[in-house]
Length: 249
Image (cartoon, rainbow, N blue to C red):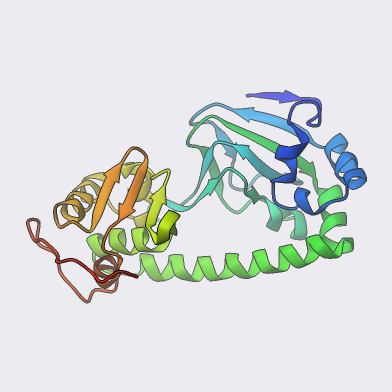
């Protein structure tokens, strides 16, 4: 892990403008924020944040992918979320100044901008465009937490995998549905609280039935209605079962 003294000279301004919060700032304010911030690089599998740490900064993920993990009372590891490049984290600790509530691990080499908490709080509380953005963000966090709890409450491990895939799918070009930069089987297993072998079998069943199509680091959802029904427990899937074509969206 290495730390640079500043960010403005290291990251092009047009890239900074594409990051959340920073894109809302005036040129002058952006320069002030960047002069106070630090750029940190992490190796793959490095611990970015450790649960319980007292760290007072807002972090923006410039490049790479991080996994948010916690541990159950029996010691098992569970994945809470995956943070993709272009997102931020640490905002709760900045607002309430409490220790970090989860551990973050770098799934790939990562590059992070750390904005001091004092600077971030000034933006949160005194700059209306950022305040509005943060209110919407916290609403999404609450909703995502509710969704995660609902997913983990499902009794069947296969259904949890199906529900997770249905939850993280996104719209692609030409009305397609896909999961871009598909998590590894182990990452999906952690998030669904199951085994890697179960995830592998579930994906194989979905592929054999024509519901999904695997490509390089991408999963195309060919039959989203069928995936949704599996996620809701309205349909069971046999390993060799073929699902008929669905009407176009």
